[in-house]
Amino acid sequence: MDEVKLFSIPDIKFDNPPEFREYLVKNYDSSQVDHDLTIIVGITKHNKIHFFEALQSFGFTTVRNLGSVSHIKFDLDEAPLECYVTHDADTGVVIFYTNYRKTKKKEIPKIRDFLSSDVNTYYLFFKPSLMREIAEELINDYENLEITEFTARRLPNSRFESHIRPDYDRTITYWGDDGREALQELGYQYGVLPSRFVVNIPEAIKFVIDDEGLFTFAAGNLNILFNILEKSVNESRKTMKAYDGSDFKVLPVKTAGRSFDIPSSTPVSIQLNQSIEYHDISEFRAKLNKDYTIVDFIAREGSLFLSSDLVSKSGFQFRIKANENHIKMFPDGKMIFSEFMKFYEFIIKSIDPRAEFLI
Image (cartoon, rainbow, N blue to C red):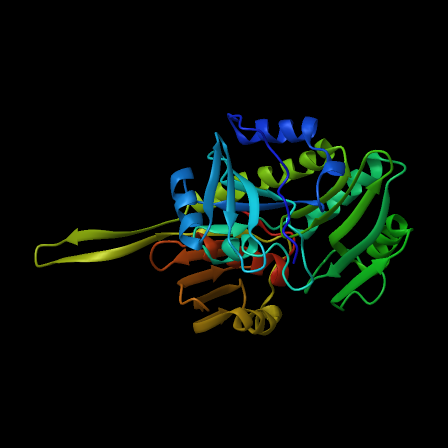
């Protein structure tokens, strides 16, 4: 692979991440850069110091410090990966910017690896309903907008309206100059929601967005893309608030005869848009079993009550309790942020695409 030169930023200091984005809107010139600009969005519970310590432990090194922006690199055998990264202390949002060339086998190597391996960090996925909202807003705002490629899915148990065989899960990948119309038609007929789409607004912008927080910018007005990115920042605020509301403590208790400890766990509560019925339980359990080891699974009919201990593939243990409309996640120790995010993503993708944190 030929070495890629990272787009140039002068030695200036940025006070905050939004200031860096404003600078890029005014100064980034895609015609002067090798390959498209890729923006990868993550979310972290690390403060800034610990976040960069985690990057360093993973293998990244700092090339330059530009205030709220850091120029970092990872030495790979084929060529060094270089990028800029920002950390927003208020929202936990971290954003990587690079024009490192993607390949068929490795799509922005090491950045995605880091986001998926650090226990206090995760990629910021977009819910299916948010992806549809973004697509609809763009279509309504720009009469000449073209969608030339998209992937759209109907998730398990989706209750988004479908006029053709609504009981089927499906994935549709589409190429064509009429993708704008096709996305709306297939959404209406088959109940699919976009997970990735390529947008071209003539004389304005051309970019790609996917539901795992990855944007690819080819050319045009970056401000349009950053307005979409702001929606992910708003989503992160809800996520952080829900996570911060969870807790695990061991409370010392003394009686006349002895002293002992009682574990106390404050759960994360996820509100379901579509209710779980007792006849759904066997399917719910089967889906859980694909991602978790299930221990002491209990479900009662009537006013639904469900309880189970779960163990993730990494060994993290927690308990869930659920009724028709809520699922609560009780940590069996300190809550691990990446495991919290994985469970929420599991609920969104396998149980209810409209689920929301109850804050």
